[in-house]
Length: 98
Image 1 (cartoon, rainbow, N blue to C red):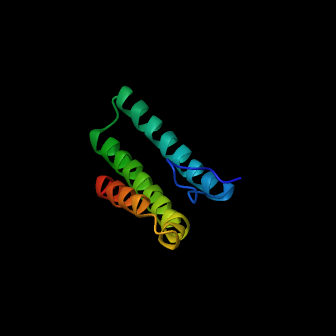
Image 2 (cartoon, helix red, strand yellow):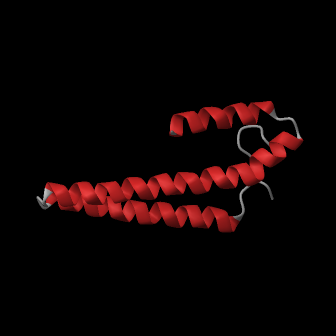
């Protein structure tokens, strides 16, 4: 069964893709919780910044995975169906992401 986003019938992601993204987010959340604990424990600021940088990189890479999957599947079908609304929404989302 396909999941829908807004009114776009071709917005579908496989369970494997969703699990990959969820796993990446879970790792990033774990790292961020460690950064929070480092701050609570008065860890060295340089170490905190390095760990925070790793969290940001993990989130950025997760965003790239989501963008690529969306292009490969949803945008491909949106182009086939001439769904200009989905294309506009995706452009706006990328603009905000970047």
